Amino acid sequence: MKHAQKMCTNLGQVDTVITFDLAIYTKAKQIQMKFPEEFSGTVLRLGGFHIALNFLSLLGKKFCSSGLEDFLIESGVYATGTASAIMKGKSYNRGIRAHKLAMEALFRLMWDAFIRWYASHAGDGEEHLVDEDAVISRRMQTRNNNEELQSYRATIAFSRFYSPVQN
Image (cartoon, rainbow, N blue to C red; front, side, top):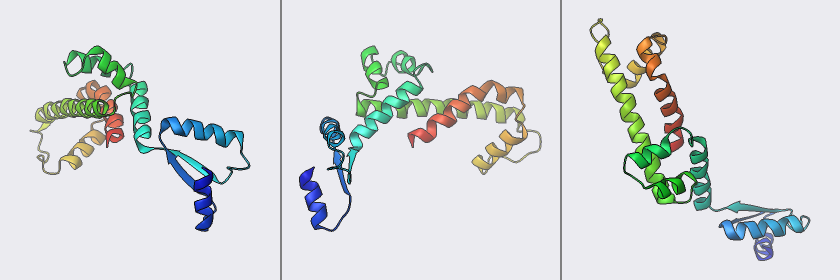
């Protein structure tokens, strides 16, 4: 850390930004807290891989009671121990794959629900599916109290929260 500070000082930079992996980051943070005056201009960052793992663990915590882990196990995609590790953010590649699969499954369910709903209302003289997003938005706004939409509301709400997180 002192070497990085010296390099930044030689380059005329006031602050020093250093990125570490998790193990070294924790030690560096302890040193920074122990000597706050000496490292006041030093910004320590956790590496991108560990940030991604942390984000996967946050997704696991957020959706722990949603049935996502059961979905991964009962669909035969992952075994019990692996699904548990994914929900804790311990496996990057498997976690990314699991969340992509879950997002795809939710989109398919939502699309099937929309197609069934649209087929039941297609004959009322309204436009056909040309601009799908505009039609979906208009239908959702004008028929917000429709019983059929109410039955799909939980799936759609979950999917609307889950999908932007994945992109």
